[in-house]
Structures are given as C-alpha cells and as structure tokens.
Length: 139
Image (cartoon, rainbow, N blue to C red; front, top):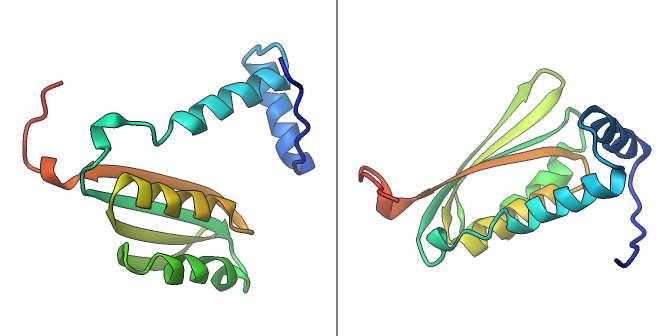
C-alpha cells in the first residue's frame, strides 16, 4: 500500500489519535482511510443523479470579523444556485444557512468549496429530490 504524507493542524491530529484510541482502530492511518472512503462516497448516490434537488447547507465558522471574507465568495460564486441564505450567531459561532436548488454536482461543488474555506469549522447538509416531495418512495 502506498504511503501518503498529509499536513494537518495539531488539533486535528490530536482528534484523530483520540478517535483511534476510543474506537480501537489500529492507528491513525485506519481512521484517515475510513474518512477518505466516507468523503469519496458522500456524493456518490446514483438515485440522485440527473434529478433537481433542494439542499439545505449549514456552514459554521468561528465568530469574528473575518466571516464575510470566506462566506461572501460562496455567495458570489454560486449565486445562481442559492435560493435563500441567512446569517446568525449561535454560541461562539457564526452560522450561515443556505437553501440551494440544483443538481447533485452543483450542490456537491458548493459543499466542497465551503468545507475548504479558511475559518470554516463544519459544513452539514441535507438533500431532497424535488420530484419526490409529497410522494411515497418505495425502495
């Protein structure tokens, strides 16, 4: 198996080690491999391909004057996708809530860009196919 070198903040490395210990992983490499598999499979849902989706995206960042500098580009770069947005303060965090309408590819690009922005702590999302609202889905 190839060896990959990855840079990360010390706090994130400490969290990896804690998870590895608490959940009895063989080491941090196993935790990173599982996380990579989860991330790669996150938007790999064939049931959503080619369908118009509604996405609710929450972006948490530390409260401070720099919030606009990393959330504003999201708004500008994806303005055709954003149906609504709101900014609030929750605890010691800024919470930017976005309602999006678009394809899986478009929404996943938004989420990926948000996750990569400086100062962003967490990005959570939920997707709903617009053609399935109000219908019973049998799988």
